[in-house]
Length: 296
Image (tube, rainbow, N blue to C red):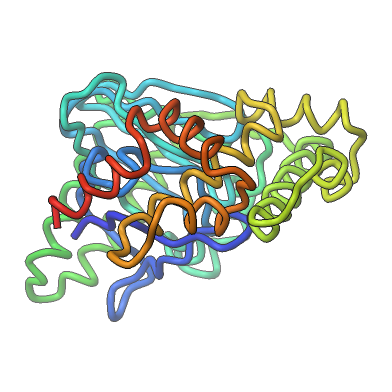
């Protein structure tokens, strides 16, 4: 079952519990344009993620890098990495999403040797899974099987899934990716999450660039470089975009009105909110509200 409006905490960590009743995994098909925002917004989680593109082309951003994943191919996204996804062009893109706790992919005795080094590597935020490579095709076939077994819940399916997870991880290692560890990269990711966390706690208040920079223990100029490099925007434009995203949920409440929503999410002018909303969503807040009400 697709999650159309997953919740995140102030640091953008996804709050969805990625597990079945008995297994610490989640596997489901996602249609990108059915998400409440029309795309998969920026978030992160402790689980590692594998995706298999069933239809269309998807643009993923992982930390500060963007990659286009073709139909029939897939992607590995490492634990703790900020990521988002959008269609390359409107086509109803669909992909299988498999999230799994790193502690569950192999027996605990093998975790330190074969899993921990990979989730700690600073040069492995993601890995493209090419279906034309034997190791890649093996991983993608296993994702399909896991998705089917979770839906069907056939006899002993939990055991079948654990076997396929070990096969997936073995083939990830077989890919031959060379691991690196850079303390500077670790610190950079930590500071970025600290700044995002601060924005998401205080977005409804008056925010200055100095406030965001202080949260990341950076100068104003370095703070701007972080946002430009990792999110391709400025810190204050990110605040505006985040406020608009928060307003989307509020506007879908029957009793809400545009002026109240504008002030609730931190705008001190209704006209300014309407202008920024129109430029971001391509319709006015009132039109969006009517559109969503008609859909429901």
